[in-house]
Amino acid sequence: MESQSQTTRKTRAPPKSPWKARVIGSPVVSRSHIPPPSKPKSTFPSPVGCKSQLFQWTKVPKATGLRIPASAKKQEGDDVNFDNSKEKTDTPTEPKTKSPSQILGEWVQLEPLILSAQLAAEAHSNRNFSYSQATQEQAPCPDCGTNLNQTDVNSIRCVDCIHNPVLCQHCAFKRHIHNPLHRVELWLRMDKHFSRVKMSSLGMKLYLGHYGKTCEGFDPQSSGSIIYEISEPEYTIVHTNGIHRMPIHWCTCRGAGTRIEQLISSNLFPGSSDPDHLRTVYTNAALENYNLHSLESNESSGQHMKVLRTLSAGVFRNEVKDRSKEMHMVIRVWRHLESMKESGQEFGIGAHLPSYHASSTAVLCGLCPQPHINMDPDWKSTDPKKSHIHALHISVDATFRLDRRRKAGDPHDFALSNGRSYFVDRGKFEDYLRRTNNDIEPSTCSGFRAGDAIRQGRYQYTDVSGLAASACTRHGCFTPNGMVDLQKGER
Image 1 (cartoon, rainbow, N blue to C red):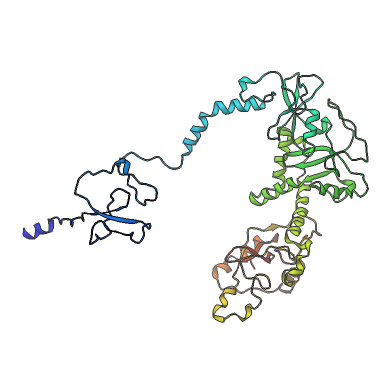
Image 2: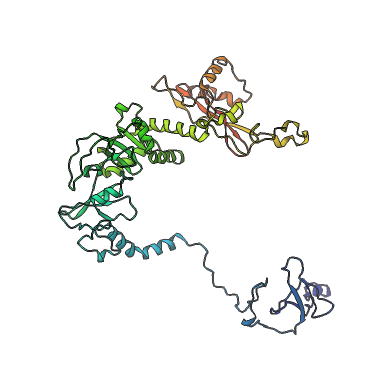
């Protein structure tokens, strides 16, 4: 019994020190980890880990339920929170992030306001923020003050402009002298609604060579205020907001340059290398947009063209001619030209680079050691014990899902940057395959030998059986001339 009572006996906690530490000019705070000083009410620097302040030791009488008054709360410069007036409760705290249902609930509360503002924005007045306040008559043209309620004045609204005000035709053309590919709507007075029309049907033309102004070489037909037919040939212009049809007036001034030069100087890219058969033009914005979509979301030219045709004609997209094949060829040439510009080859950068990268358009890893580029010229004399700092780690891997089936195509097709980018030179690689045609790699894996028959049948009708690539191990950058199309199955 005595031993049992000794084991169940509760040990008392050691008495707490009556000494308290407080910052001079602040309320009393307990600092149990600081030993009490030998003399009370003496000032000394704060202990390690605290801010450099002076502490004053004061002996506080024992009291239960002692609270610090509100006037003695934490002041500026104190490193202790003295506000202990609030007691802890079991009330759950609100989460820092809102749940999807809470976010949707907030949007639902704004539904009447947003719908009213959207209907007012789509109304024909200039500009009421509430649909209930929209008037039946149009306000004057905000640029020239013309009365848009007159029967002989066309009211035009641009869909792609930010504020999309309702303008007269003259002011609308003046505003879109540098944006002739914006989509516009015409107000139909009899039907009392806006209808999508082509700017070319209203008389809009694309002038080259004079920043949108008329060339002095010809006298253009004056555009009236009504819709009329245009006998001039129209070109197909592919833009980010759709496919447009519009006449192009070329500059005929002396020294104006060829048609291809005039298009490129106006941020346009020709769809054909023959000026006599040029009928399709692409904007640089359209090519950049498709390039990002194809790289990031693996979008094909046909899928991208479906979107542009839908933007142009809605559900009647079959009325717009499909330009996916032409765009597939144009984007191939455009990407090659962009790589030539970005690599600096057109600026003579090859003269400042080592011979192994003088004519390459590939991007080197800026962090890996590259001789004669980002390394010490005397790097070979480095201490052997520190030679690891100059090591270049390369990893090689292959995928056999990027195969290409044998199909009819152009037998004379060639690469635009043959051996100057990430893929090896095609001629040298084919010569290597001819020299190693009968080489059979020995295999020590029984599982690999068991699947040889299946693999031979799998790659029987393929031109390319896979892709092998090398990259720096540390940063994942592909190495120049480090990619190759596999031609012999998995060998």
